[in-house]
Image (cartoon, rainbow, N blue to C red; front, side):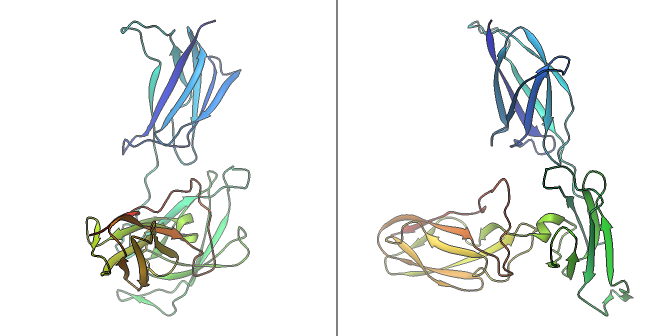
Length: 301
């Protein structure tokens, strides 16, 4: 029996970027027998080795992403001839766009919830209690102290909240209430607002950090959380260091900047690591993506 390679390149329909961690299931044409299961890598690729000269039914799955399922593909035998067909298929997934609040003073928080077995968590009640009372918004009194929303059959829920406001959120899904601060944006991911973590770093001065030996260089930075909010202090929820403190080291940490001292000629990098949040939480994300915007190159002249 001849075998041939079959590969899929899976991308986001809107951005064109690769979709990682998509489960690809290959079955016989009738969808009765499962041949193999694989998951796309960071480049959105999933590769298989299958019997050639056959047709297969393929199904794609990733939570929160929509695919055309099932799809029928043909696997042609391998050949050294340059005209031989390639068993390469491009597949697109559609990520539902975030719902945006139409009122400029509101933010629509939306997202999905799951059970511990990975299935959608339907009919989950979340109660948002405002931590402002009384409150007047553009001349109108905000009279409702709390609002309760429930997830639908897909585990999806959305709620409009006042920007910059603080809310206590209660649910049977966690033991005590969680206090959240609503970001200044038209939309946000609700689970990431409930369980935020450091997401990205922005250096205000573009290009590498340059300092002379024994010179102390001020580096202005901004740190943003996964829900889009900016940290009021870059000295909390994040640890700063250099990869080689024999070349440069961090000597001071302030609200909006750190101070780097040049130790000897050479090049190293400024790195940042997540630490336990100031509220005591330490959410686990999967996939565990690194902090964007770091490392930053440091040149000591």
